[in-house]
Image 1 (cartoon, one colour):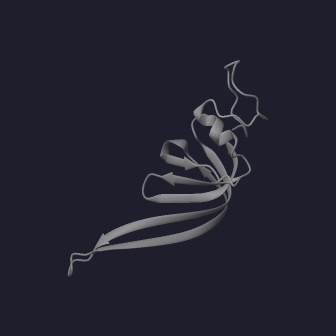
Image 2 (cartoon, one colour):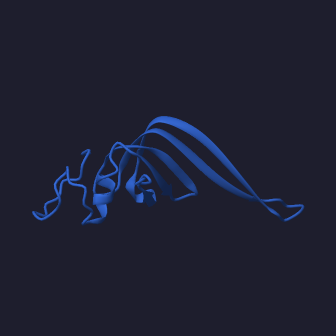
Image 3 (cartoon, helix red, strand yellow):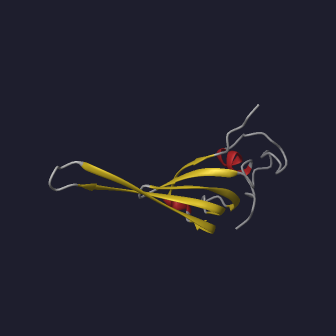
Length: 108
């Protein structure tokens, strides 16, 4: 996995440029930044993006994973929402489980 996406498009921006011309350019600009990733199965990740590829496979460092579970209380029939969190030093994320990637907030 490359730390930057290699494009075969000769008009694609160079790795050092700060422009967004294609969707994956936004992820390229987020390398070494903390990003938010929403996954299938009510999972959320927040961590530093170390690497990615064109399939959205990613390597995140200092990653916080939040898993949301929902249960129905049989007596009251109310929905019970539970969130569990864990911190992982390094995590490989398979791209086909990714729903959303949010880059870091830009402060101007």
